[in-house]
Length: 300
Image (tube, rainbow, N blue to C red):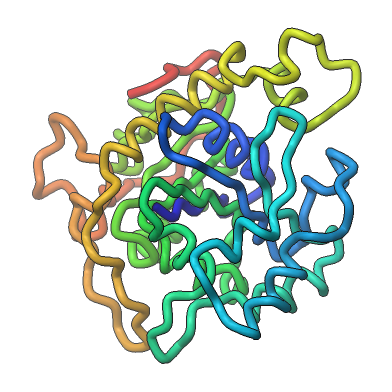
């Protein structure tokens, strides 16, 4: 299974959540994290990893041929044992590597897709912020599931109605996760017509452990399951794993796109189908009011 984790605006913690998601993926699957953020990677710096092996060495090796274990041979391990394929912090190097790793336009699966198709394997890809033209988008389009992270304040949610139709065309199964405090899941459903899968809690200790920061309490360092962030990631992973055989990926289209069924997003309980557009969005009479609601609901 290939899972893309990304955001559309700001920095809601895609890298940290991707690590948590892979670390808490239900057994017996073997999971790894791949950094494909075009702005450059963070894990190598956070955990003082050598510059190789990693994304650049994988891109070079993939030019000579691809096999099922190629990705795994270029991973390193975080202190807790999680395999990672780290990108260099330099954006130019990362973008060059991504151009070599993108799925073949002629129909080839791409090296990450080959690794994810192996029985019992899960590849969680940190795609960073998905701007138009991002070199990570071909990888996003080949993913089986897409996890979209967004802060829950008005200035972040205001960008979603315009971008969600495109996200629905990228993946056969996108899910939305709210991050931190702000609008509740019920308010997001009412205003945007899309039900969030849940809310990523504010968990400084858990995030610090997953980020490799010093002075993290010892009990957090090697056990993501102890943190609220780890428990949330496990719940999301279980939900995604339950749909490990999704519909066929939606092909990339250069012309006018066909509407994405409402079912592509999580269903909206109690909302009449006529109130939802073909993209799963409910027309909003006006912008979200400029206010915050601390302590919004954790899930909806």
